[in-house]
Image 1 (cartoon, rainbow, N blue to C red):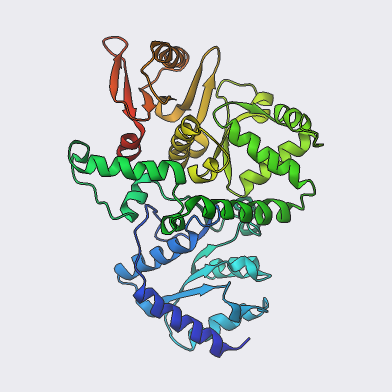
Image 2 (image 1 turned 30 degrees about the vertical axis):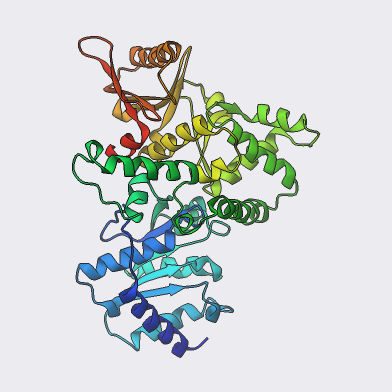
Length: 418
């Protein structure tokens, strides 16, 4: 590896930074922090590196200080650990200012972790992305030992999605012409999700199927040396079909065995962990459950509605709850639970005193009674500051007494107002 090649790459990528146009995403960084960006494939990790670099330019950081290296560049194939220092030497031959370093797919180079630790110890500012197949968030915590913030990158939120579609909401948009545009865009987002690339394709389902196969083989099968691919694939499908229901590993194993495929409960538990590691799904626990149940019976949601939708027919109710789960998990992460005692509440956020039910429609009195009953029980056990029922299109208010009410909101409005 030669310094001349690194100089060419550094200069060319600085030129690209001046040319690139982005739709800003809702990501915040600590000004003095070093970051590793992780997340499901194609969620936009590289894009956010560019966004951060452009933000620094806006703040007055000179372009010559920004060093952006994509280690997927075929010119860097065969790079060795000792070549990392040549990269720094190449930059020093171009500028005497201290660089800010952006490394995309750095895990392709053996020994990257030692280099990353050294940079932080020497007080460089560093931003890193890595492929889930080789570098997971839990690996980062182990390897980098708290020197970096780990930032989870998700597909577009609905707010980011409509911005990428060119719609800038005005004040009181829900009462004017923009409401119809929002509802039309939501239908696309609801069915095909928020991966930035999916916006570019006509056959979105085909692209999503292709993405799933890449995640399945690279991030689950190959990374974890899975031999029983059929059992893993069936576990994914069972989770999709049960996305609204608390599901035990034992139940999934029994269903798979019923098809004639051999699998153990332990294997199912491992498969679900592989899915979580690849950021394909996330899981939430029953707030009222004891320890053993918390670990073995959970609700599992897909990180994007588009990925869930490829497994389902008549998917509207599952997609509705899944999209609400994604929104809440992005915001609250490990403070998000469901509540199940005699009744069930779909989502409970203890720190906020917030209870949320999700139902497609409240047109039937039996549905109203069920959803309200669950929230009332939760409020009795753990007093709530706010109660919500999220629907597909309906808006209302349910008065419980002089002090308590339940707000009923359409999902597309709730996602934009939260």
